[in-house]
View 1 (tube, helix red, strand yellow):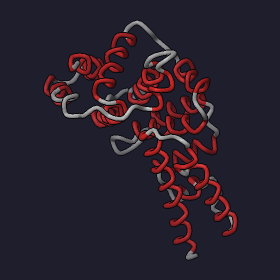
View 2: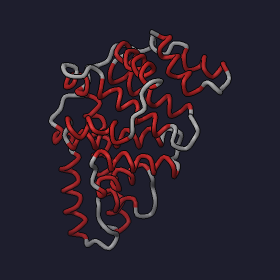
View 3: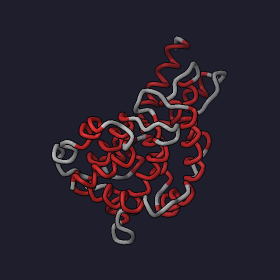
Length: 240
């Protein structure tokens, strides 16, 4: 099992010293217990076993390689996500299949995103986008090339520009980030701010997701908290 994880990591890190390989490979699977079954897994296993997970992994690899650098923090982030949400055994199977297919199969971003567009609700695709921003930000910042790649993926996923900018503002902070999270302009009135907050809180509230999947619930909770933080920041700024 571990050899397949090593193969996956080795694929990206073959130019790095062997010591770094050992850091990732050693104890990679055995330290984790089997996790909860994901909504991705249960929804698609009857038709295309692992297809959604493989495409999610391929999209994350696209973001990781966007700036021409394979960073250990980003690999760690992806590894932790898959093991935490799919369990060590299932994660190993995903990495194994991915390692076999990536050598013989080249897919465009549109191809990789198609299964999400065809078979998942919009809220799930927002979760995918949030995850990919997390991948790019795992090393502490999102490069321009990574942002461009995530933007391309968002377009392929059919993500609305307002939702893209809102999630982007959760990771890339500037003086207007709080307003971007709420999808309003800094010139918005106090009443418009309150209305935007209510709308965004409703959109990203965990109960809206109607899912028991831990990965989706956690992501929704994080976005909901960002919406609350943005609203509180605007209130503080305006001394409301």
